[in-house]
Length: 115
Image (cartoon, rainbow, N blue to C red; front, side, top):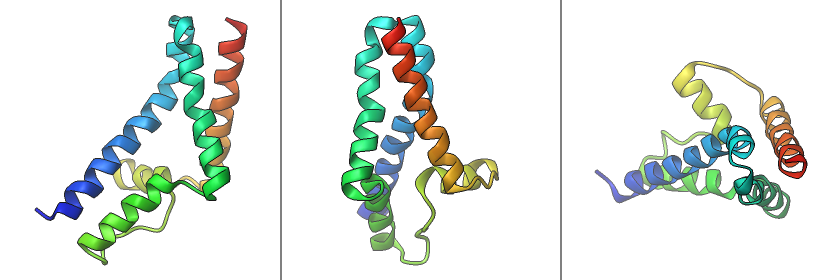
């Protein structure tokens, strides 16, 4: 197996873990209020990086590594859109994904600051 494929898959797993943690952060913050500020750092970091970088640098890193491994298997969609389609055959627009991401961040902030 190519080192680039291993690296790309590793980046994908870390990225997927970040997304899952973002989704689970609201229930975690409700049941474990002391973790709220740490969890709030996730979407704040994400929003800052998106603003500074103009997108998700982790997605770009994975694309770069996949192109190094095999230029024919790279994808151009945003990470969540691509993997929702690949794993669940769901075609969700990038705009809806961004809306959901920002909504999760706002709800998490409300949960953290009201607990």
